[in-house]
Image 1 (cartoon, rainbow, N blue to C red):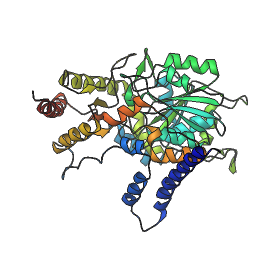
Image 2: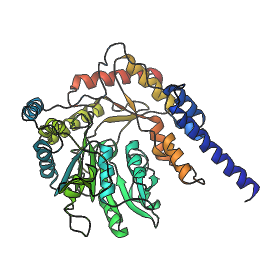
Image 3: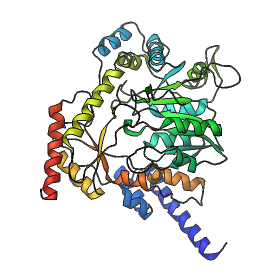
Length: 448
């Protein structure tokens, strides 16, 4: 090995070792999580350090006047849960879970729906059902929640990260996915980040032409449509989170969808296979002989009873998101140095959250502090996946020659974007107040 290459190789291994030591140190009782955080950050490459967000703004002494999210709770949710309790229907093997799955099948007009414990486990189930594993590569968007990457890694596949499209989009285009293809690519994950639908038709054609599995993560896009059809219907599989900040919720929880009734050549119903996967590979014919090595990914009867009534309101909740987005766009129009999140090119403007972009990471911190001082909670956009410390460590442990990719579009959004309170119960006067705080701050800075 040439001397310079050897030195570079050793430095890379040393950096990886420093990150690993920082994270492993978490097991020691002498350290707090804050200590580990500082140590981990200090060991990161400079590019990653420069991209990391600032600390969260200080919380008010009382509750947020405008929390970033408030769960939508259907008027019949309480009665549905009480009925399940009174009838002892609280486990995963009960009627409320089956009822919830039937409602999903009806809403999405698909033959397969399976309730599960989270959006992460939903993605894991999609990958397992599609037989994705070691030696396979899965392409995912850079600007998304780390759960997407974790699911790919946890089935043993290689994580490949694609940049988002050029300015004005939050998802990779078909070209971004195409650039990341290799002979080992087996699946593509599309995330519809922040409720902005990806351009599905060309990505579907790319998958068909290359015999790839298309998985839609619709956690942030339940009720979002693409050319008149719900997202989640185009992929071979779809997964969703039902966490409390999603359009509909079971508190935690999630679900899997598929347009296929069967997947493998053995003819087994996909629902039955998923039913086994969510319960340690259990099969009803034997109580304690298990067919697959799997985990516990079940949804309880109480969670299903809570969320099932809200399925009937998906369209109503999505329409409310469209209304809230229109208020933000009205009150923030023509504001200096504030870029509003893109509208959907393929259907109604129904974002999961409403986001804005400012000039720099420093300006974002300043504006978020002003909003916090006025009781308004906000969130930074996702730190892109390739800049996440545990994923960087994983990539370097898997491949000692791993080079940090240059994904400028996602990196820019991760530095300058953040989102505002967005939930079903906001009124127009609430949005106007939030926007007036932003407007006063921006106009003061611009001297107007």
